[in-house]
Length: 613
Image (cartoon, rainbow, N blue to C red; front, side):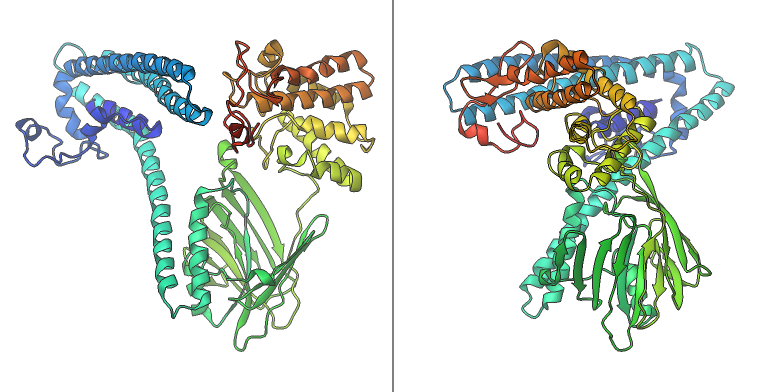
């Protein structure tokens, strides 16, 4: 019983980053220099109270289970009262000092900093409100039900003890799984930090070594950059690594695949050639030029190898590779020597795709010829084997000397599934509409296919899911741009388009919605106290509604078009005439512009989305 309650709180403490010190302390072995008598009588002393599978030790306390339940309920009720008092104190403190600071004559930048600090403190009140609710619903209520179900005011006989033992064991299983996941996540994070620190230390040593070669220094910098990137950018995709190498023998190859990405190479920026639709670089480590381009449906790789004496030219297919270094969750690869074909898949979770559980990428790679092949898994080579599984696996192919090889993927189509619409609607799509209208139509048909299969216009679709990333509903701008320029083809389903536009502008979508359309329509702007990016959202929706009106007008729905042209003028509701700037407005009508001229230029101002006033 005690273990159940304490493990419950221990888990919430970790997940929600709530420091329930008074509770989690019970899950730590005693660090005292002397051992109190109360500890000596504890059946879990020196055995780890929170160690898994210790439920047997808890059975000795079944006799006084009823009293223990009451004791814990009382303890957590007191804890909830403490939290409520703290919430009230924090709110009163925040209100008092915000008023003091707002009435002060301090400079705007200082005032903003102080207010931000006060608001940060006030956020603790919301966190502690959540704690109170969780203590009540997830601890006290469950404990009352647990007491009622498992204990009576009488001696528990042998059969009841046996039943309790089984119930306790079953109850512990999901928490053990969750605890294992938590420990895995903690270990993964700390391992990344350890690797980054080791890489930085190694780089310092190499940089201070006057005898170190430039190649060694470059390799050290690559390692630092690789681990540092683990905590930056929205890393997705990059699935299935294709890498040309030259090796002396199997031992050399074994050494490369024994460590993560051990096949990587240094290169010099001056060897790069970057043009629209073409990329070239020379890999110094493996003495091979890489040339990449693409047709409409496939990517084309060419690898002219330098003729190095007694070196074998090879291609590595790292089937478990992904840009997020720990993104792979499952990988499979298969070799068909009769077809010179490699097939496989990788299931991975990236920055965005983890929001919906991950994505599986399938691939087929065909060679014109090869003289040898094999697979690897967990750093172990298996020559002539045809299958490998796991997130450390791949295929190696030895090429014929002095023979041109073609590497291509057969299964691609012109459906566009990864559209960062917020980034492309301003420039790239208008350019495509003017210079490559067929491709622009493909993009729009892909957007409407997402509507057909998912039900809603997307903001930033990834793979086969919505991500709800960024602001606005700018798919309507892309649709309007194509239609108003009369570049759309004959396959447009205007009925489907009009219905999708009506939904995104007026209803809360299940995925990729605007900010609460009914509330936006009520205020005629997005209130700042309901969404801190209100100014950016209001401006975006005004533009979006204007383009929807254009589509409605083109479709002959002039009255309905006016219903969107009118909201397109609501941007005026957040224009501060004296400041000549667009500023957020809260639900009471107060406008909240930056307080000083320099504050208008603060990059990534909290009042705007990735920008300033």
